[in-house]
Structures are given as C-alpha cells and as structure tokens.
Image 1 (tube, rainbow, N blue to C red):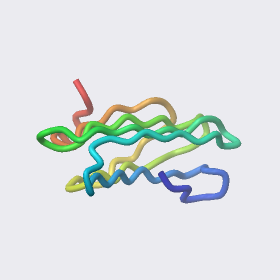
Image 2 (cartoon, one colour):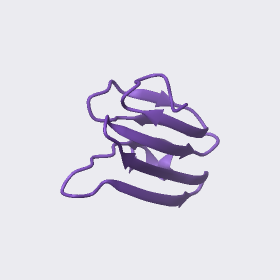
Image 3 (cartoon, rainbow, N blue to C red):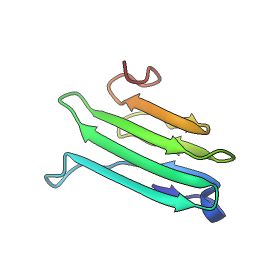
Length: 87
C-alpha cells in the first residue's frame, strides 16, 4: 500500500506476488485510522482484503484488472472475478 496523499487520505493498494511469495499482510496506523492489506495467491488470481479508514479513499490495482475505487470500510476482492468481490 502506498500513500497517494499526505497522511494516507488517498491510498493505493498494489499487491504484486512473485519470487516465491504467495501471500502478504501489512497494516499502518494513520492519522485517520488503520489501513491494512492482506492478499493470497490462488490458482486463478489473488484474494485481497483491504481496510480503508473513515474520511479516506483508496484504489485497488490488482494484476490484470482495471483499478477499483474503494471507500471507507473493509473490502474483499477476487482478481478472478473483477468487480464481484469475494463470495
């Protein structure tokens, strides 16, 4: 995850698996609250869980998918089903 504006008001989630890494998890305390990202590679793509604090916005840029805007809250995304989320 990357701060696209001061204080993480705008966030970009850009997971990039490879080099033997099949999952990752991170979190950061910002002035607005916790930002977190967890992802896991599957046989068909990535399952991604993201948390965006109140008053902030984010963009998820998953490999092979168009960017997905995210508002505050918790989000679950599946790169094998762009726009559908995780069932």
